[in-house]
Amino acid sequence: MTIVVTGSSGFLGSALVQALRADGARVLRLVRREPTAADEAFWAPERHLLDPSVLEGAEAVVHLAGAGIADRRWTDPYKQQLVDSRVIGTHTLVEALGLVKNRPRVLLSGSAVGYYGDTGSHEVDESAPPGDGFLADLVREWEEAAAPAEQEGIRLVRLRTGVVLSRRGGALAKVLPLFKVGAGAVLGGGRQYVPWISLPDWLDAVRFLLADPGVSGPVNLTAPEPVTNAEYTKAIARALRRPVMPLGTPAFALRLALGEFADEGLLKGQRAVPRRLLDAGHRFSHPTLTEALAAVLW
Image 1: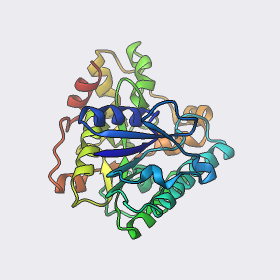
Image 2 (image 1 turned 45 degrees about the vertical axis):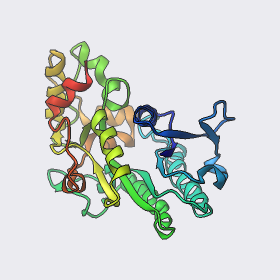
Image 3 (image 1 turned 90 degrees about the horizontal axis):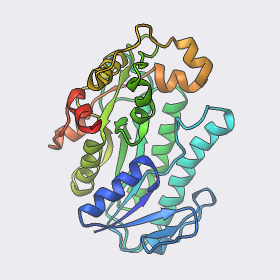
Image 4 (image 1 turned 180 degrees about the horizontal axis):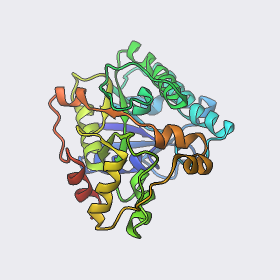
């Protein structure tokens, strides 16, 4: 099987490439620089440049490219970059797919549980409508940009990814140094939900979706048991055998330091569950947060 991957230099993309190759797949990585290896091909998504012949004969495409949501403060220019890197990039890929004679059978296109906005304590699955806010609007546009692939007869799966847990990257890796010195703290009131998933389970879910022809549309890539930020914080501290700061980080301090991202990325959350994966028969290796942390921290 030949699988084309965008965003292969990122946290999730690099882990996925390694896993797919371990499975015996041939992986072709789309890169934005001059290719330096046989497994690379050039594209310039912001300029709508992608040679359709690169995709010819591939069985699947996994599209993960996009600027990091939490990489920088959300200035207006960076918010536009977050949108353009996803929406224009997806348009570029889908346009090229439409020109391929022997098209891939499936496109797994990046998305996020931010689609649902802030759900409070209300549990949501893939049937829930989009929420409000910048992230919800961004994800909705991102998903709509991939829709034409379905008209070309390609099975389209939207990967609504939650917080992926790993000590090597992502949100957990960024806060581990604080927790290791006993400075981990609850964020705001701590009642906002964290829709987490372990990196091994995320990789297993993606490979499951590549292989199962019966699944299409949005799929929540989250574990079956989302937890509140307070529960999440205590679980990390417990796994590391470190205390939690007695006073949490107040919302105003987070807003002062991080601006708009604090509200949408940290102080609000989604109690999202993976109904489509469970209904399709997928089984999680780490269904509870305690199991996941034990697997990814050591």
